[in-house]
Image 1 (cartoon, helix red, strand yellow):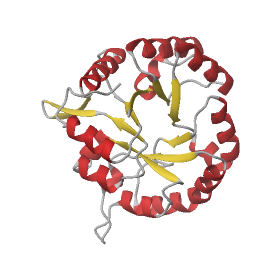
Image 2 (image 1 turned 120 degrees about the vertical axis):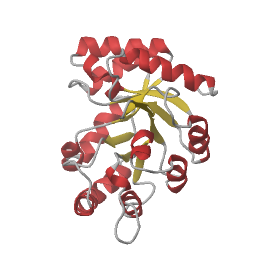
Image 3 (image 1 turned 180 degrees about the vertical axis):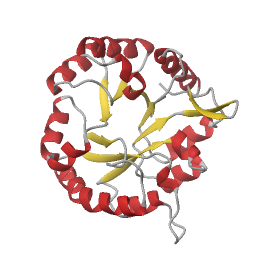
Image 4 (image 1 turned 45 degrees about the horizontal axis):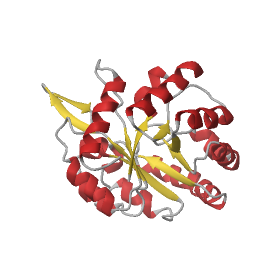
Length: 253
């Protein structure tokens, strides 16, 4: 497994191409070799290809526009191929909150899309928040219904450890349930400040990442992408550095 940086953490540092280029370099300087591109300014795939090469980074997954994925999956695959990325990610349920109804519409809309993406040599990924862990009257969680509706080689889950914990789950149990679908995951810690649940650099909160990393290894995960949506006034680069150094101490790189 390799450690990567999720660029949504650094979205405020990537509002134009010059800053985006500098941010790629700074992430590489921390020691990361892989990234997920998400929440950044508009870019041409050829530009990203060249900038990644310049910084010695590889993009292993994106979060991409849901409408573009749905309306032109072949074009999206071709553009991702330019910068060497086979994993095409959705950052959330299109339209927002996940309910049984919205999940049904998603399955109807994106099942044929996932099939086209697979046929063109790539894979669709879905990133969870906490809603996906709500339960149907049958007792089944929405995320379980989601994965049962797609073949394993058509849809993977970009499991977000913080949101799984926020949703009241045992993260290691969820990892076990989703084994085979977790090539790319988001590592994000949770800490309590006063009466507030906050995101934290990995290893600086209350989640047991030694067990989580072991569970991910057992589940066949390949890319562990550090993400922190909110740095609460701390430099996000410093947050990424803390996470990187902690994960290195567990034997990852």
